[in-house]
Image (cartoon, rainbow, N blue to C red; front, side):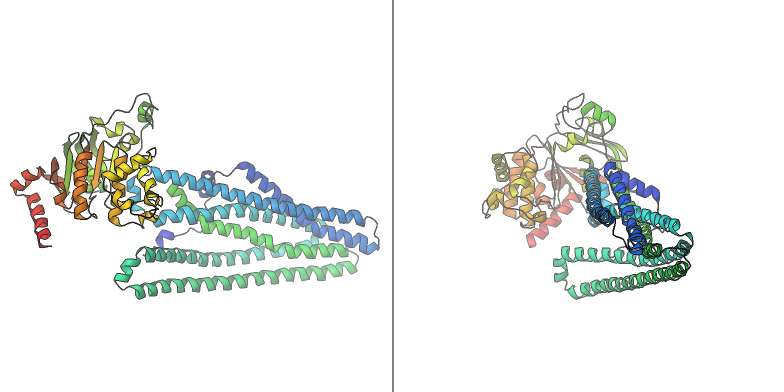
Length: 604
């Protein structure tokens, strides 16, 4: 999937507010920044002393043909060199610490914030976009700031010290360099803008290439089964060719820029030598001064380029900074109010009142909900699920089954109406109160790259080994687990890729059971399990769900015949409800769905 150019647009102006906000969020230690600035100023001054030291040596030792004081001079020069080396090591260390601090702070904040964001955020934001912000953009931004401080402070003070020294030594000869400075700046800005435009396109194409690699890896099976390898290669090669072409253009411009600046610098240096030589013959200046001015004229252009480069980098990284800030400032749609936190706390016993025990009655009272304005999924929806009931929700795709369950679990909140559990409006109690009492088994479960034991324990971290094995036994997962080479200590792999889909479902089932929740949610939880195992799990479910409320989203209707209540949804409305027997006798929508599946199953 190609990345939209519009989504990767950049501004040509540096927004100071954006960078200050990013630095505030990154929260680098002020002491480190102050220390770095001080060290860089010292380096700028010490490095600029060298031509003055040589000037003194020429005018005093060489001109007068004396050696008196040479030892002291050598010691001072050595001290300066050692001090520069020490300061250089120190500013590299400080810069690295600042970059590391900022990266750590931003990513820690981002990780915490992403865990607090509501499901609706993940509905509209692809995983690749989020990862790119938190990995690529953060790395680049922190490097830009930490090394930008170095280039700006060192370059800025070096320019000031050099120009000041030149003007003090010989104003007329220094004026030649001053006249060239605006020209050099203009050339630098021109080339930096050209390079910036090309580099932005390179970064955009690099993002496309990353996305194509990701899709190629994730969709490898689909690609092979559809024989799309060659077409995918051609698409990838086209993007890679564009990036190659722009990279060559950038290299050419960089190759042209440096010689241009160097030639102008040499012209200025040559003029200083010519005019300085004439002044020397007229005894208007000293040979040491000419050397110092010549050396400074050659040194002046590099810090100018460094300072210009800082502004270009800030300009280029502006959009990345904005994207990271937008992510970190993304509002959390489902939050606990201050009153709720004060009354109940974020953990049981942390507030003024204890968390009420959940029995499991769920009521939808005049609930209206839509994912997109103007496209309602539920309107004035009413339903009461008694505590301990097993309720199956069926209907065609898009009928609102998953929406209903997600609202009951408070993964989303209704635009209108109330959802109550045991008579409590779920918004009047902490989210954690509900989540602690919720067991959710997905159709496509996610396992972590940890042992099977740890994946089951994820449902209740304090669970002991015997409890883990008992949970696995209840869902008949122990049979395949014990056949594995390392049993419960076998690693599931990334996303559980070392296990079959059915095995992953069994593990997630055990994970839900071990949490001992009051409310169970099964989202087509047995779709990838063979019929024999499914029958066993149905028996286990009946035992486990005793005195617990269960919501079952089912497409395979044979699995819900024993449900206490079956609800048939269509366009967000209940069109039928009752037991399996009652609905079959009614010969309505459920009868049509069930007999349609039964006919298919029989033919198979």
